[in-house]
Amino acid sequence: MKKLGFGMMRLPLTDPNVQGQVDLEQVCAMVDTFLERGFTYFDTAYMYHDHNSERVVRKALVERHPRESFTLATKLPLSMMKDSTPADQERIFNEQLEKCGVAYFDYYLLHNLNKETYARAQQLGSFAFLQEKKAAGLVRHAGFSFHDTADLLDEILTAHPEVEFVQLQINYLDWDSENVQSRRCYETAVKHGKQVVVMEPVKGGSLAHMLPEAEALLRSAHPDWSIPSWGIRFAASLDHVMVVLSGMSDLEQVRDNTGYMADFQPLTEAERQTVFQAAEILRKSIAIPCTACRYCVEGCPQNIAIPEYFELYNTSYQMGGRTSPALRMRYGFLQKDHGKASDCVACGQCESACPQHIEITQWLKKVAAVLEN
Ligand code: SF4
Ligand code: SF4
Image (tube, rainbow, N blue to C red; front, side, top):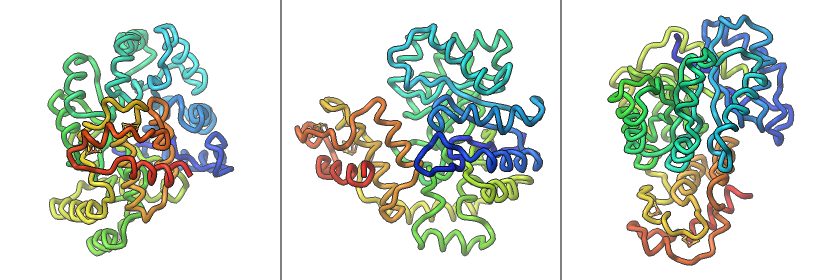
């Protein structure tokens, strides 16, 4: 299988303010080009595009191309299943088959495992549910997507060796970060002998439009390479990566990605050093020196996702104070389980716990100004 997958979560819209209104005509052209060029992997999820992405997959892909010409991945939405019972998994799964118009899924994932959702998955028996679907021939390969520490990943993979693959956030800016832990998570998956699907190779678009100094460095190495292609090439160069997902938003992005990924050549050591130099430049422009140690989180009466919000703010800062749809989407996603930045009641509990002495309450006001505006 070629190492580029089509992420169906940032599709072109007919109304830029309505996530559910996807430009189906353009998506059909994107899907056709992707398949014509020999690529086969499509990734969707229950909640993408206001719960509409799976229906778009049906119309643009399933109803227009032979089932054996593509592989399809979707996910069980654990983060929205707080009050669910085990029976809800069956209901949602059947709904997904119907929405996508397929008789089986090639890849099926537990969506967004972290400390909270892993506990929920254990309560609901989600890992056993996946194996039942596999035994029934309704799922070909079972895995999960993951957003937490390498230590938790290690714990989950030790407890569930039956899982075949994991989907990880891997990009060159977060390769050694304490928050995302791309490298450590990748190495943990490799240690357990798992294949890796990469998500967010361009960090939600922030490695597509970057600081001029970093961009100039990349351009000087390869003037003919697009800036986002560096992120996808970096992730695809890792040996145990099965496929790198790109959430493509127009036909031009499909043409660019499929062009250099058709006959993919891994980065050389010199090229890897170039991306790490660019990452170093980007890191120097970080506004909030949060190390994501999470000491501040426990005890917050509003359950505010402080390090995650600070990471989003820093990403926005690196983009010159702008936000992207991906950043706003991630901020909204985090709010399903956490308070907003503006919910802070300034009790001060977090600041007394922060080893970096960050003025958390002041920064949260800035986060709210940027991401809630
Ligand atoms: S000051 Fe705000 S963020 Fe910090 S613990 Fe209190 S409510 Fe939470
Ligand atoms: S305690 Fe300070 S450095 Fe640690 S995660 Fe919280 S804000 Fe970041």
